Length: 280
Ligand code: NDP
Image (tube, rainbow, N blue to C red; front, side):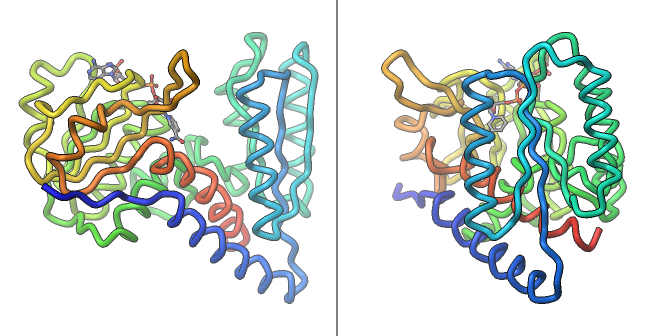
């Protein structure tokens, strides 16, 4: 079967270009959108993410403010910075890069960010807004998955959607978003009795389990659409997802590659949330 590659690189560029145009229009009205990016410690992976986020801000004409705090920063000091940024009217969005060092309670920090500046969409108010179908920030990776489907011309309404994984940042929010798009949604996890039987029902299968190449062709229905959220780097530095692309792709109608699928969408949706923060 010939399959469509769902091209996250191109779609994320389109979204960033739309954000750039909107940011420019706001600038003409005297509004400069500003994102505060806070990093604690010098974890190399976090460093890469933070640099990429700042670069995306530059591309989109969004001002970014950088706060690089030492590894030994106390919870109290980080919370004081968050309070300062909450009170600063020139700051639209606050992003605290996770994970945080162990002396800091991540949940406390997430909850300290004012909901109207919660561009990562992790605050319980944002999660509650998504749950009840109200206006609020949606976390970036799940929002990116919906954009990938819509902008690739894939209909969600009426489809059997199966999500593998139930994390707060991917599995649960993506399930709610698919439901809001009128999909018929099933959520699987590590205690699901017969995972293969459930995933084989899926017209749209979203995989976010954090296990390299776990989903092979025998988990997939002929003609399904596959969204692979996983990112893993093997010993040779090569990236792969939670889906075994080589065996699954020939069986499906459309699939996201790794890299170049879901990955680039996360930052594009962060930019989109920064723009949306002006009206929230
Ligand atoms: P978590 O580890 O938080 O969650 C994994 C989920 O998968 C859990 O709900 C777990 O079930 C479930 N799971 C684990 N093993 C199995 C199994 N054998 N069968 C069925 N379900 C299983 O991961 P995240 O949601 O944070 O991330 C998932 C993947 O996505 C990772 O590879 C991560 O790197 C990637 N990721 C990529 C992003 C991007 O921008 N592209 C952004 C965020 C994540 P249970 O709840 O029962 O333990």
